[in-house]
Length: 131
Image (cartoon, rainbow, N blue to C red; front, side, top):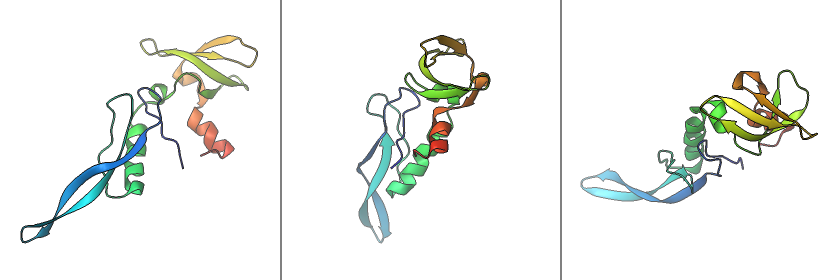
């Protein structure tokens, strides 16, 4: 199964199913259904609830896609720049200035902007088939 990472803090989102909602059946009758949703264990990010885990996954992917790529990359992620053939590791980022601090395989530090990125971590994973 695909790992979904919180765009705010980088933790793995948990699929929860402990929420129930009342479904109206007519004539004053109700039935309780399990509601599935993804949430971050460390910060208050949560998706809307769904009736199946597959639907909850779609909601989570949609929510994550609304964050810009710069916000979704975290320390330890690998990416590739336009002007560099090496895979670089993110060692930090400055969100105020929009700068990424990267380390190459030799230990040299490079500074880049989001415009310099050719492939983000999730694009590298898709290319390698690690979904």
